[in-house]
Image (cartoon, rainbow, N blue to C red; front, side):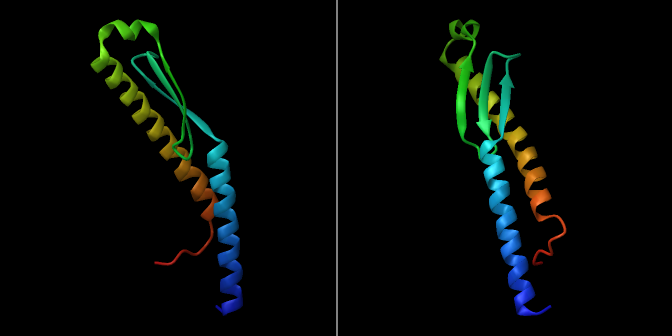
Length: 99
């Protein structure tokens, strides 16, 4: 493989990854905990956009609220991870990556 071809492939990969990152920034997931007691909206780049806490959770105290929010964030992160794997996999499909 000549250097010019290698540089063209690198530029193509860089462009595809940049497009994938933009797509992830525009993609949102919902993390849900406590049967909907807390919902976290997060982007595919892990930016938290919104946290919704159902009023029925509040009387249970700060520890319960905190645990519910944390569980919803973890759920959102797992969903974001799955989307990241998919989007980045599509962006790099067929591209020879260094071993």
